[in-house]
Image (cartoon, rainbow over all chains, first blue to last red):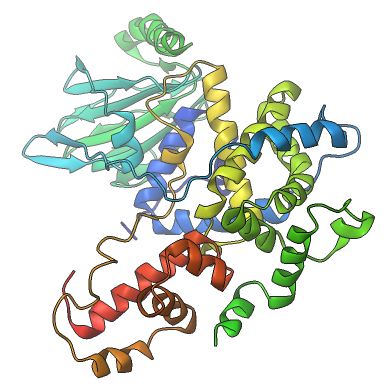
Length: 235
Length: 221
């Protein structure tokens, strides 16, 4: 656990996480951050306790179909025929290391599980490599590796991008981000990430990014295509 | 001496009520049966330790609509929210023996199960890849089976009087479970039923108690 994490998901995002309202990609990146960040996992526990204490029946306007006693007792009669589980089946823990330069990085468990089918790395440009994960039909999820000294062209986001730094660090106009930091960027931000020492991140985008300067803009149709391909593959 | 431990957990009166409810199987439920002040925890224990259908019925009545509300909030789909009642309550029945009251309220436990089943149900409905499930995203604290618990506590010759003196240094709830298993030679199920605690709680207290004893005796795991 890294106790010196500077950047965290907002309380609102954590709250939606504990209530199960986030899509899979976003849930995974928040869960991976929590594994690395004690304060967020404590905060999530508190938020969950709040959600539980305010967990009440729906208002009278909205009721389940089978709210009659008879329907419920049929359902119960079916349920109580099934056997109970006396001890938890523990899956063997998956461990996944990603080898980069001269060291290897142990992924948070939730990411290790998600990549257990294997990752295909692609070199994109200027020392940047990406490997996509297919988690849901609304987000583009990918590991991004930036080699020391490289930078991503100036861009903005049409939706939002959640990035978790897994190793190393990167900088942009707004600050410097280190291992375990959780960064949200959206349409308000126009930024140009670069990394002096090299950096491995996991990023979840809910819409394609958009380059805003120079020839990189020629890549925008490609970004759009990539986003559509990633999100349609799942559905 | 065990009476105290049961009290710590849920309160003897509540347990007695849950047991009374359990014995009412053959009777028509009295109209005020639902109003009896039985905690969710004692009902869940009755379900986990004794497959008590009446207690399960009570839980069902208490939680079906809450689960529906949770399902509506997440999926905004009435059909799915209805299905979620079945999925979640089935899970409550199946996993009741795994509930651990040292780790939180029954309501919290049922909330977690329901949220997780909702998440998985939605993923399945959207045909998302099954490389990951809700239990990976919201991992349970390790509740792995205690290993080597059935070996001699010391694994070597340790003076009994010494163990006895260490024994007093366990917390009351831990001592109660260690005593049930190692001195009274009861099975896990028997001990859980006797102490009126969930099997999951018995196992975790046993694991912690044995680890502490090993530590005191100076045995490396």
